[in-house]
Image (tube, rainbow over all chains, first blue to last red; front, side, top):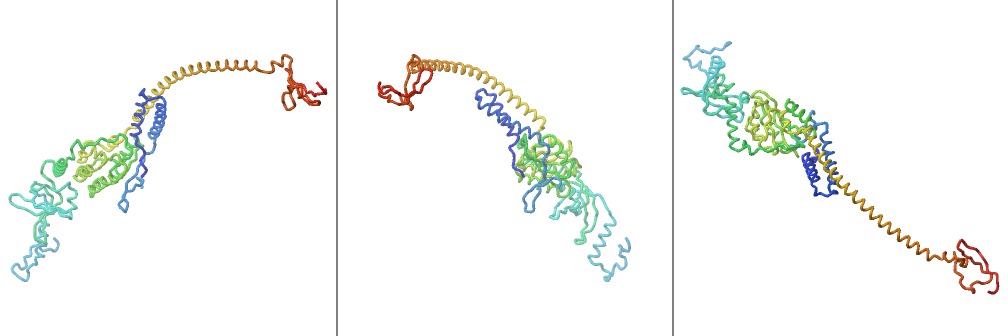
Length: 75
Length: 389
């Protein structure tokens, strides 16, 4: 089982926070530009995830020792 | 009847012709089975007992009589649960004699309650009442579904249409999610136990955000496992939000009442489980626009400010440069005034030795000494010729 990637929801929340911070006139330009750069990166990765083509489907199996494992659905 | 002589009239009074107990009970059994075949019997259930073997034993009675009944596991397994003690039922049975006990009894093949809704309804209401009592149907228990699941489990038959429907909807809407199918039988013998085990297994899978449990439509009997108290409790015990999707629009199962969300069909469950990426794409576009707009605006403000600053910088540099230039000119002028070239220009010359020492006194000019005369426009190499000065 692969390591869990940061959740899309968290990513989206961070993006919202960045936009709100950018819209806050109190943030100085240097910080704003850093936030902007971060935002652009996150947007890029979020959009990439949206375009992930193949749905990953596994089936859960019980191993002989009682632990759980996964296999391809069609096996 | 073949060669069987049921009415053994040969020697009724003779001790020699006495039947063994085994023989008479066997004859009685054959006689009863031949005489009745299959019958429908109506009566009230009493003394019900389900044995570990799965067989049911009970008595049917009415005001005047009673009869012992057995319903084998292979027959009662089709039923949702045992009949309620004291209720009236119809049984389709084969009368027989249990030889070991010399007991007349009915072998029940089918059992139908006469009460409204039947045995199924009765079982359902019974299970519902216990769940209700334990607070499992409390709407306050319902958890919200995570908006963007990263990994979800689907508890269903690996071969069913339900799984195909769910996977196709999820693939279209949100392929970023990982789907773990927990295979289980959803109907027939063992379905209840397998469903419970599969649901329990979900709790051991890492990072699961939600679970869909369900199956496609079917007969009431087909859907029955989802109406059992055991499976309903297993759904309630799942540690992540649950979506129950059993059958078609009209079927409502017990698991629907316990799950956090009830979906009318497996496809609808998939739609509830994952967001639509088209909608999310729009949300991302909106964020991108806001980011671009706000940063654009701030940059143009900063740009103007920078331009003004640059103007000021240039002006002050100009002042500095001008001041420097003036000072350089001043110094140059003073340097000019101090320069010995000015003196030479008036017709004087400087005499220096070859090594550059100035020859300022006559005593220094020894006969034969080579020296260099520097004038305003260059120099002349010379030699002392005279003896005396």
